[in-house]
Amino acid sequence: MEFPKEIRTYCPSCRKHSVMKVKIASRGRARGLAEGTRKHERSLHGHGGKRKGKKTVKKQGKRQKLMLTCKVCNKSVEKVLRGRTKKKVEIKR
Image 1: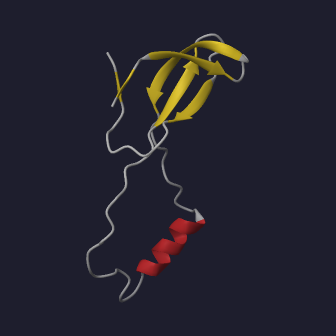
Image 2: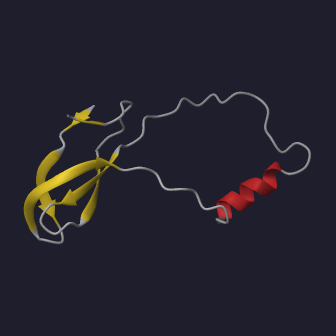
């Protein structure tokens, strides 16, 4: 799925439509001391920590997230593309 480098859309900080630079949002690093991470680590300790068998669930496509940066005020806004997509987002050259 191709997406343009720049789009003209609404900026909440300027409160008007302006040209924005588009960048694919990268995922941040997971927190090692988060409650879910600690819970998962505990379940893997000892015997029988890992489950046997294959997953029968087919993965769904993810909703692609873009970061838009306003050229006027230089603030960033997230834009999540609607619907689930199996294709990765590419920025047009």
